[in-house]
Length: 225
Image (cartoon, rainbow, N blue to C red; front, side, top):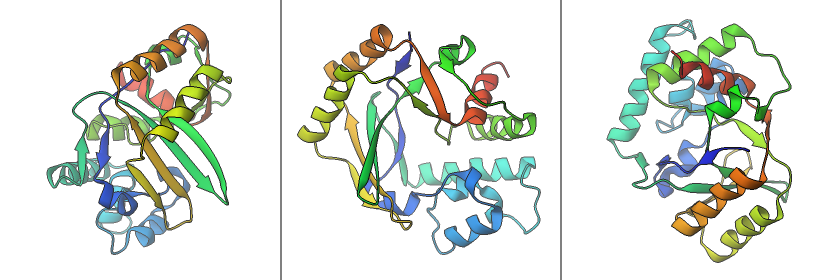
């Protein structure tokens, strides 16, 4: 069965969330990232595409880039742009595009599940792309890219998430510059946290990588680094 757990998220101050929101690192080249982060010192691209803060033509896989990412992350934390929750929580994340919404659960997923094929893969990975993420995780001390896992429908979990959304206000609710709506709820009640964990432990045998094969492989390899 799948092992997930709550965690202490490093997350933005609500008033600044829309400024930090950025596209994933692997859908942009350096020039595109630089243009999007122009005049926005709090764009998360300063951490995920840190070459934008270094001289032009800097090798994007050089240690200098990863060190700059770590420095920028420290600045975000030091200035309280990002803060860490005091207790482990789950987070409900809803994306809305063109009037249609998709809701997911943000959690920690066990590296052991990846190694034991509880997390199912369907793509091969490239060593050079893995190494990029390994270096980024190792030097920044953070996993800055989500792995999108799917699981077979579970009515009990679906009802719990739906009920939580209806009965609790979101901590973030904004539309980013690309028109995508982002709404996030913090699941902070111990009973609900335990129930979510137990549902996965007892009722969800596998999860499936929908996106993030390289991020998942890199996280697993960092464990043994």
